[in-house]
Length: 246
Image 1 (cartoon, one colour):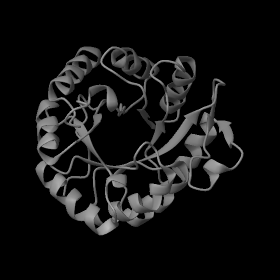
Image 2 (image 1 turned 120 degrees about the vertical axis):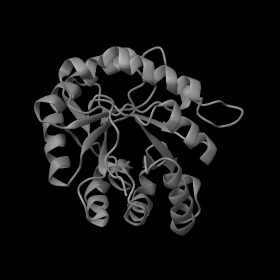
Image 3 (image 1 turned 60 degrees about the vertical axis):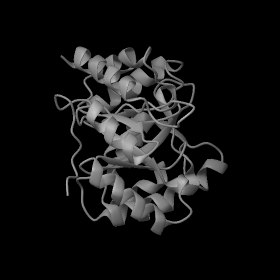
Image 4 (image 1 turned 90 degrees about the vertical axis):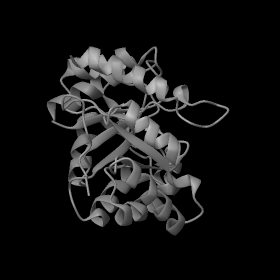
């Protein structure tokens, strides 16, 4: 079973949502394999049904499966960990406090496990209280370097920086990118990314020297009528990636 994502030139792998199994296959082809296809745990009533369906998805796309929470919902954390244990996907989305559980249940270090941290309005500081209980407590705000060290302690692979609001927190995002580069940690910018701002958001991470970047592009490229991600938009994202990475 393939567990390592297919990064374009070893730097960038897209992350987009699938509206159906056919859509997942079309996305994978449109991205020439340089993509992780998100399927949300929140869409299923229980673990068993999610595992059965996600295994079908994985079979269609060379296991380029990203098990999602669903808008970063902390209440999905335990379900995501259990699904991931059984499915063994290439990528797992987690709240900050769910990283260690996911890594332990996976039983291997090859699957990418991100940890969700959020902007605070202060450059260099991030919110890590994104778990099911901690999200309801007073904000835990720490230096980005500390957040990265904690994620490494827990077996995490990357920072999921959400919600970015596109370029609304540009200076904060740049500081996160620079910290990821200096501490050899992967970065997953998420929230408000579209075809217009994607190039600049990617470039900031590339210029900072981040070794691996997994941008999440969701609602802006989803057809509202069908619920499917538009393969043509995925092709556009790949073209922008190729232009920026070289």
